[in-house]
Image (cartoon, rainbow, N blue to C red):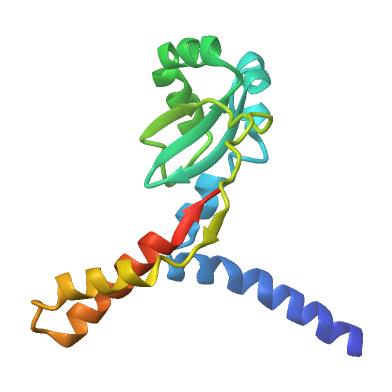
Amino acid sequence: MRGNRKNDKKRSMATIMPGVLRDRGWEAKVELHSIFPKWKQVVDETTAEHTEPLKIVKGTLWVEVENSAWLQQFQFQKVLLIKAINSHLKNVEIKDIRFVLPQDEKREEPEEQKVQFVAPPPDLVKKFEEQAAFIEDDEARESLIRFWYLAKACVRK
């Protein structure tokens, strides 16, 4: 008898989920993103071999392309690709495709510069405080002095 309750719960979830998706407005998003796992069936073999869908933002599909030569080729085929993709969708459609090149993970990042704290000489601090003394608002004057102090004290190695 206990096993029947589990089956009842499973069946009720299966009947409830489509309504939840529809009511929450997720149905269209789920359908749009359904092309990701079946990308090889949605587009032709050559396209599938040299591309990978990345994301969908406001009806625009972002597709990573192997290199700039393929990117140019797929730009010429954009309308045909949109039609092919939309033929697999029932209630929504892709409005545009943006092709992007892969982010080169091997590219060397510039070396991160380290910041070292070196307090400015007291006479320089006093001179700046005297220059800032004309500011009537105490809070503004103190903020300016703190900003100046940090700008002078933080030195890149």
